[in-house]
Image 1: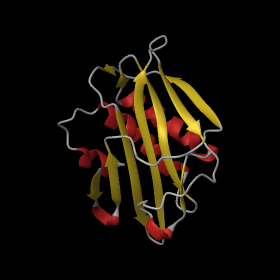
Image 2: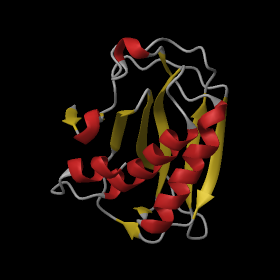
Image 3: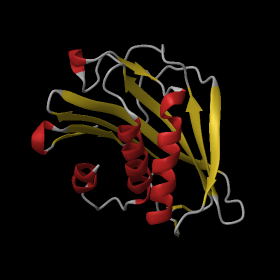
Length: 177
């Protein structure tokens, strides 16, 4: 895990491996085909990003992770899958939001279209792993602090992080999200 303390008290964590203790039950799956700008052959297998962004008396929180699984493109489009959970999944006690919010694992339906939007935006701008499927396999949301804006930005960031070469400094990309 890599932790970033960014300007204006913004904090982020990046996992380059699958998170431990992730327990949810998907009630459905949202799938879409996206047309990437380009295909890249070197990519990360998985990545998870968690962000805490203060803004005055409010703050935003979200955690989203994606993995690349074997599969193929369909008519030059890539399949993206997003498991949808309920809003009462297990607590994530070690979140960056700390005691400021009740954070639970999973991605409720209210944020799914924001993830679709962010992923599509990033596929069109940056590209996708060649001949693969992208699965948004991990998520956590805050009761008060999560919103569509944060999940759209996290989804866009994750697609970009998946295809960013290993020698690129991730802090600059996270700082932009």
